[in-house]
Image 1 (cartoon, one colour):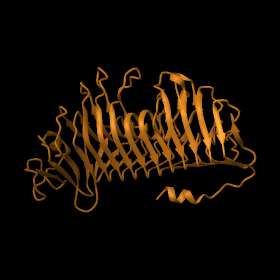
Image 2 (tube, rainbow, N blue to C red):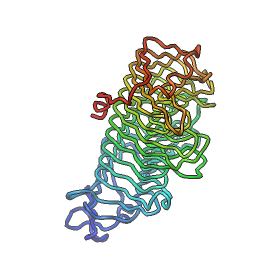
Image 3 (cartoon, one colour):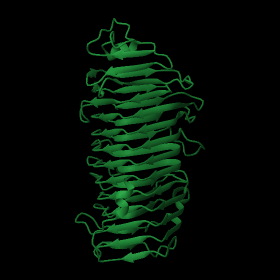
Length: 427
């Protein structure tokens, strides 16, 4: 069944035609929507309220619920101080061509789009699509997927696609995925995520949060994910947590993640930590970072970090990436490895065919590469191009016995380059 909502409608209407539409979000929330139904809001009109779906996790068998606009343009869902769209224990949901607006990161108390799974027995809800959506003005995440099963049974979401979507001017993150973290058990809450041609920007952080905030795109507890052709920029400036900071695009506690053809730049931190371009963090394994462009970030262009308590971190590859003038604050490298040595530390990782340029910064002591950490082993750099302006350090940790440098080019006294690959990356 197709339902229509318009400010020219009436909630006493049947709602099944453009001639007799419903009027309010409250009427949509009260409806008994069935698999295959769609709800369309009149384009270029603003609807005040908070969309809400509560289910029992019943598979929808290729019959998703669809929420979108009709007419020319997009409808706006103004959530005020609440969450714009909440789906709890529901799979098979498509959001297409809508704008979600909150009251502003300092006033709002929710997320723009929030999918929550609290089911037990390892149920992964499937077929989530977010396409051509704009989300802004929320305190927490613009878009968030979270799993909260009490028994940590790896319930979560699978087969999720977020495409051609912008998440900006929020507090905690642009696009965020997190599950019940249990590093002592095998398995992950989420699987098979795709994020393509999205932008996450000006998600500046939540002062006083006592955890890192202000991330662009961050995935955790995911097995199998691809982030490509995305941009993350100007995030993180209000993060004041000294225990850790935000990053433009990153993953932690994840397996088989790929970042490719993305650009991450001018990301910031208000603390002494992070504010970088890309990051494989805490327990990431079997993952690839390739053909990305990082530049002008406060923190590292490409960070690999292993914190205490994380799962084993191994078998990652970074190749054909570019970093230009990252590490603008806090003594970071264009490529930076940091590890406590937990669970074997960062192991069996290869960097090849990357181009790293670093110039000195007034607020930092940057290096093209920083691999001074003790908690790393079997790290190999080969066939990379490392350049500096002659003032920034080239390699910190070149004599680390756990790191091998082979067939790399090292140049100093270079001007800031204009890499042809940078334009190619953004195509």
